[in-house]
Image (tube, rainbow, N blue to C red):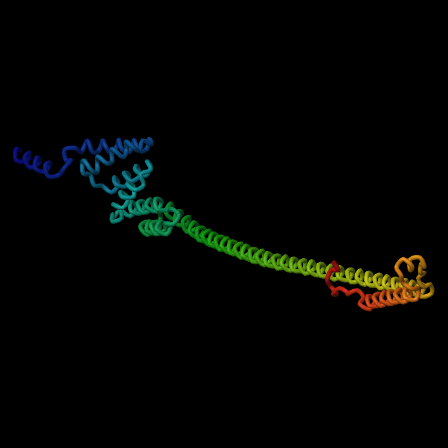
Length: 298
């Protein structure tokens, strides 16, 4: 009996937890009770103590620990626990683990991975209806995502085309505005040249008109001068004729004072009259010098 007791002690030392069967069973019940009550933190603590502290390596415990972690939102740790079951020989547990891995992986951009996990779940257990439903659901989601991506790509393409059209319209408008500015500048330049030419033509016309007026004024003055000269000549001729008709009278008393004979006095007067006539005729032939055309007469 003593020998048997010693053997049991050796076995207890080699195999951890042999003396804690009651503790293990109690922790299992506490963990399950806590999980069903929704106390996932307490359930996680109990399952972790069983698997890590007491070394109870049972597939069902790994699955339940994964469920407890998943319910708390710790998807990464839950995924690690489910991965420990991919090589289990218990097909139902393997199918459940793959299904949970698919649920965790089912996110936009990673749905193909989730689909592969659901497919493995169905391979492990074709009767897993939840895995089948999730597989069909993810297939539809992938199709919808692809369609949405195509729509988004089409929308992006249309937006890019709209932007390109806007850029072209802006460039065309800029080119049009630039052409209009150039045309306006050219038109302004032409208008200014036309205005300058009109001003120059007006100035030239005014000068020509002024020159013509000056010319007419000079001609008028020339005519008036000529008329005056003619009148003066006629007056002189008349005076000469009158002088010839009425020779100057000789005062006999003056002749006696000057001791000149009447005949000699007549000769002197005649000579003086002839000299005066000659002087007048010479001045008449000289005339008035006409000013140069196009220049002022002052």
